[in-house]
Length: 301
Image (cartoon, rainbow, N blue to C red; front, side, top):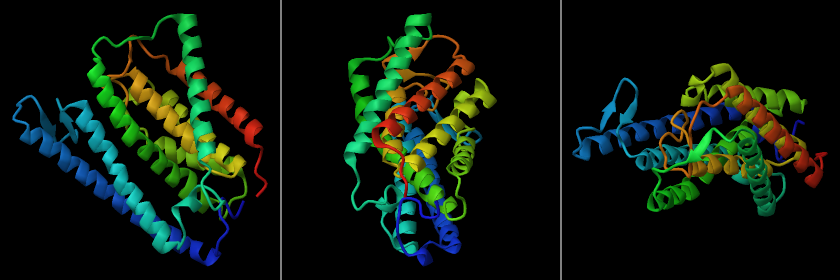
């Protein structure tokens, strides 16, 4: 497990280089956050509407269009991506592709397969849930066709960038760093899952149950990492992560989520049971792992 996804000169992948790279990436993440804050302030200050304003205590905009907030927030991932590119290209002297696969080219078919299969599993689980309980989701009557088209355009442009950047960092950079000293895929996946989950604890949905919702993120982080390690590539995880987020943004409007009041097709019409949601995530990601290994086998390195 020492060489995860890539074959290269180990002298360019020393601990000092990884620490330097992490500092560069964190610097660009912070820069993106500053730009996001400035953008929120400018949009709320210049729109001439007294009902929209920037709350410095909360660090967020009040009354701002969810489209603008969505675009500004996701644009920060371009800074994150730039930081990763600079770190990998100039500190490690290799390509971004090496964070994803050991092959010379990306397998776009594998990414598309991961996207399609994960969406299929997601749809089946939600359909079964609705047929059994017939509650939880209702047609969002506040969403107009024009609003949904705007949302669709934003999601198609920004969400794949967001999810791919997170995959490059968690299933690429961090996994390969840990892979220098750890040989257990389970241990690597667990560490990544804890880091991945902890970074989502500020999300609004944590208000339902910090423990159970936190476990849901840990399950997602663990399974996406474990799948990448077992199949020898982050391509399936890239497809699945994009499918998950795009489905949520486009089809489920939930005020207690990162998507907030986005005009999705359906809206949450009742209390979301965090226990059922956690069980659903375990089934979904477990099922995706099973079909992925059956389709592509286990990578032997």
